[in-house]
Image 1 (cartoon, rainbow, N blue to C red):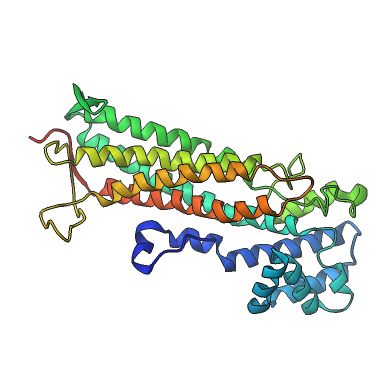
Image 2: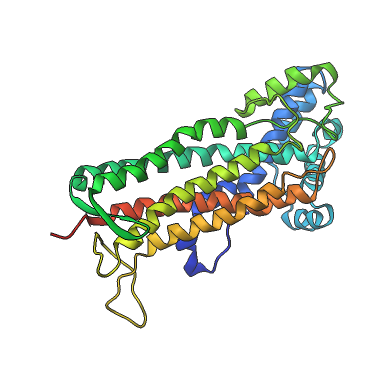
Length: 352
């Protein structure tokens, strides 16, 4: 679920690239990829017939779900997978229909689909971190040795160099970028644990099936049952809030530096006012602060979603769907706006 805004707010507060990566088409493609790979792994280890696996593969390559029916069924079932599987079985037909979705449960499909959707998200975040870092390095090169009045508790302190402040921004973001691969490793995992987390239909073949399935999907096999252990989701939420928090620090500093009477920064293309034409508002800097505060408020919600009752949850799981995509989009939007903001800097430091 992507952030929903009136059209004129979309470019300010949303991110179309992330929305596409997490949206309906990506979600359906990921769920279908799971079912095809599951059939391949099941056939490879004698759990379903190889001909049925081939039929599943062929039928799902041209499968187009009835979206109206799927939406109505999701209202009834609380999840799209039961009706999606029913539609896929109708498309597969014959004995292949009963072989499709063998041993899996709804949560296996949705959680694995989330991991598949996050693969391009992590790559995009990495690219944007690198862009912001390059822009900061350029600003340090251009303005780093200029004098700047440091401020402690928003009061004038001592004269420092522009580079001293910019290095604080840069190192905070570099630390987050350095942990991005480890965060991806925790999130990009397979779920295949069956109805109650015991993978009962796979018997002693569960390990090789998981290995084959994960290899085809480009995911890792977790050492735990991920159905109710949502620590990775909570940690990811905290990580996303730390991204927007570090960028919010940049935003608030720029906003304060741009104040009339302070004049420690010049930006091109500031925002206008309907009542005061002389104003040039540092809009992108302000939005960085907004996105930081937004994500900070959402972390608590995903920590509430750690409370998954017994072997599977409906309510806690649904809470994740409401919050996590929004946090991802906010973090990606913040990185994009930070790059635009830094690229607009014409001067940093005390005016000459």
